[in-house]
Length: 355
Image 1: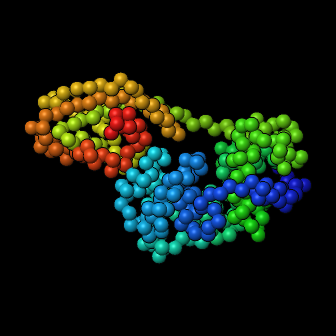
Image 2: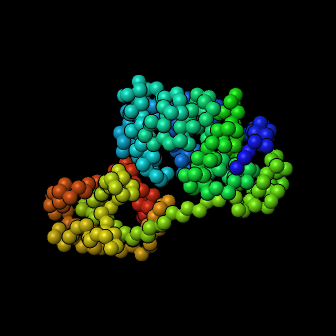
């Protein structure tokens, strides 16, 4: 599509004017500190601002500098991240902090290309840090920006396709004002999030409506085009709360599946695994089956879970401990459970039980 007839300067001016008239006070704005900007961008990946804000504040308070984050134990970082989901972000965050401190003398790369080399930093995040911290004229293109550009310019290319991403990024880079890239990037993202929303956009009060392709052609429900569908996998788990005296058996999840590095209970998955333990050999007894069924939705999976409780006599504690060491499970006192980093599904169950 040819955009030569479009006045990019007028477009960006209207976006900036709207931004100044509708300010939003967020703690990571107004700073050039690359650590705080990086932290906010990683937290806000796949996360709404309202949900991510308290996590950002907790991380900044706990780890004021990248050195503080690098020196923290990974389990502590995961525990602080608990409930935010997409835990690979937390692991990458911690890995990246250590890399910056050990390999880059504690300093962030100051260019888009340099930032792209950091683990967990893709094109969007690198653009954000480069423009917000270092003033590089690199456009940030997220779902909000896709939507604004697709509607205003009448672009039908699928935003989930490789071709679409390249087309939108090239256009965004052409539009961005060279003298204020940071402010413009914030402005167009806010505009998409608050004005040009996915459903029920406020077109009647939009400063761009007179030249907006989607508005003038009544296509705001059609644009942007997103064809790609993610196949959702359904999984069913049954968890066993195996208790022996004051200690519970916990499972630290490994790599290659969901929740890497987090703690849950021994479990069996329908159609995949058998009972994790033959508790009869420990003179154990299944004492309670919890009726409530739990459901947790991830971006690519739907998890269904049920729980039951198994009591093992205290006299068999050492036998159980030997088995745990052999099988890779961990015995944890009930009053220390809160120290474990756990997935939201497990936290919800424990909360319901008053634990």
